[in-house]
Image (cartoon, rainbow, N blue to C red; front, top):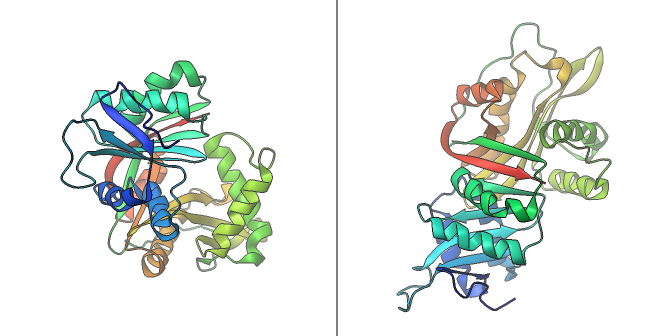
Length: 305
């Protein structure tokens, strides 16, 4: 797989070489929030020298570029999900990448990236990879660079303990909470399909100190009421995922009150910029994120299989 994968296209797509990692990081840092997942894998590649799953997209030209990254038009990570980060405004770029992906990449669990790029790519890939199980057409990419605005839960909210890092003692309570969130968002039960990998992922998040929990009283029992995780960390950006409130405790402003505490711990321990993405139709979540001071920095689209 060291050969260039497109011979008659405007762009050459090829597995990344170690010498290209620094230029790829510079490219991705042009959009550090949306590119955080790709940047995370680039950081690992720079540390280890292993570039598996990373691809470069270069503009074809008869002229030798002045610098290694001058002809770089995109960086892609292929793993469980496909994350394309492509320069915008060139329709041939997406078409060339889609052609390579269709022939050389196994269909992933999802394609995630800039809305315009993913929509165009899916249009090219749909015939080969259909059907999609679910398309999240418009997701807001949001970020927070400074302190979050704090708020209190609404009157009548359950009694709550402080938000804190999860540890291994929380695992038995946290697993069903995470699985419930996953079923609601992704549409299938991770404990019925791929349980071992899902459990390993959760244990890794806890061990990495990337998992946050808040206990409270629900129906007279002590349960996890709120939880969230850091799903990606790259450069100076941490991406929060898996924000969840116990169904019996919803409607009390708990996420709006608790997420600022998570953000403060993430900014203290991991990265100065906190980000996340949210479905545009989830009005309650969007309102909560805006209330804590997050700003919209772009739009994504996710195609799930």
